[in-house]
Amino acid sequence: MEKNRIHRLTLLALMIALDVVLSPLMRIEGMAPMSSVMNIIAGVLLGPLYGTLMALICGLIRMLLLGIPPLALTGAVFGAFLAGLFYKFGRNMYWSMAGEIIGTGIIGSLLSYPVMVWFTGSQQSLYWFIYTPRFVGATLIGSVMAFLVLVKLKETSTFKRTQKLFMGGPLYGVKS
Image (cartoon, rainbow, N blue to C red; front, side, top):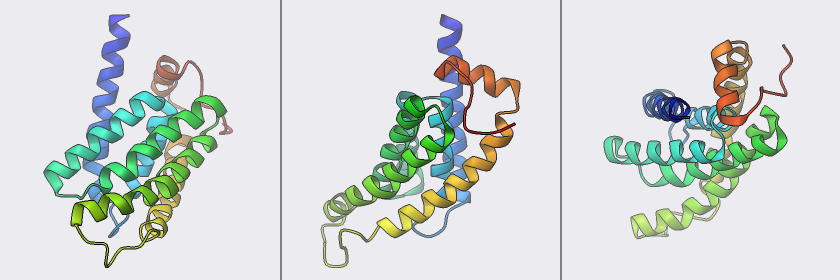
């Protein structure tokens, strides 16, 4: 049991490190598709609890070290949670992708407006749907990239063992 706990925490730390390092490298102004990639992989591999924890810690690290505004939190946390939750109940990677698109692309983008109004103290240049096109675009790009990564990852024995540890079963929705 202790070995499983250590394995989970180690994998969580690895996913956090990958997200923090890769997100700034694959960033388009106002869009962070690598966060979506990592959220979907975390949803499929770690589930909703650990995936959300990963997104929360990554958002805080990016805010503190890279000077990214609170969008790092509002965008990623809801997508990671829904990616894991949708995968858990749908048992299909496409469900995880849909959870990321709904969570980050729709919910996260709409919640970003009041957060940024509070953060900047101004609502003159902001309107409710200002973030939605960029967030949805980033999640669509990230979903395609996550699909390509997961197709290759699911062939590895380490991925299968790890997914069984967290999610209790194999990756469905991808033909071998």
